[in-house]
Image (cartoon, rainbow, N blue to C red; front, side):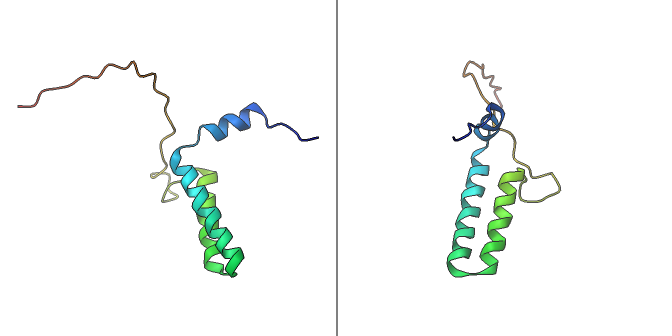
Length: 85
């Protein structure tokens, strides 16, 4: 019997930002190319992008480039405009 994923695991996956999905896809593509060609650079690049996606780190590991978490908006927020002269 297959085990069902816990609601917490599903919630964590559904809250991924689009950039995390992109990094995961790029990482998987590089790993696939590394398997097909036996290229060590492709494996390294795949591991780099894959770890960025899994650990939710941005372009640098200092924590300053981490993407913001996805926000849910209700669409009822009132916008205010200021006239500049």
